[in-house]
Length: 275
Image (tube, rainbow, N blue to C red; front, side, top):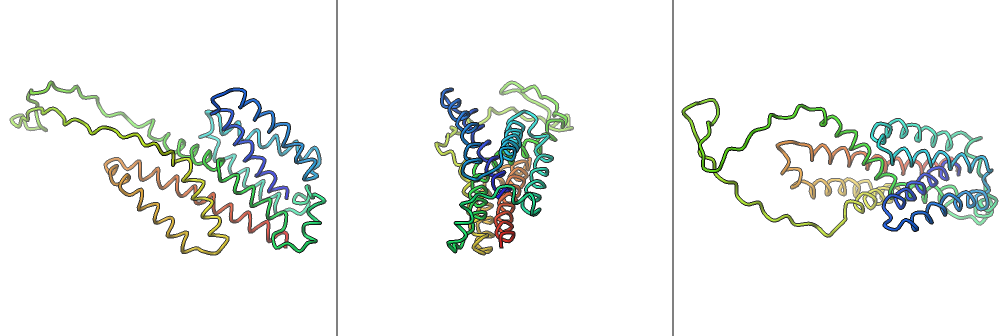
């Protein structure tokens, strides 16, 4: 239960930070932040029977996570803090003394009813779904920023001064080979999409992978991954001269799929430990 509550607290902190940074009206951001800071500790203590020091520790860890990944140092710290979070979740899930720090009274009544899903597994499933909704996007975005940093130090190509239209320039190293400058064709009008699919594709894809993974439909997961590559192929093929689109697609997709796989492992781990 403790590991699930930590992951859920981090997801709530990231969602609160999202509202704080993107809310068009400041009162909405302030109300959301106050509700999260004051309401969630009350839920931890009153509903989940967490000791006050455990609730405070969860809030502090989640706040540090959200503030770090929202800062300009997120790309440099995403790997170490991600590994620390994974180690902490594993310890809270596998070490018996840590896993039972939070043991609400209603959990025993839940299990006494003979429910198929235990309260620990249900809480972990909700925490994984909440984390994969937005926190996973934050991790992927910070990792892609880290991957792009290598390009910022690459030497810039020499700047060429464009020749006036209709003049003659030397073609290559042959002095006698001259070509006339032809004005470029007018670019096609840029169509701005009204869809904001980027923010929806990632969570929907990760939720689908978790659901299919828990159902044992590995073949459908493979088809889903292959279908995403087919859909993105025209965009990647158009960037074949540089290759950055393909690399960005691979890094983002592999990391997103890995986070979904970690979510499956956490849910199965919670079910195994409870059993």
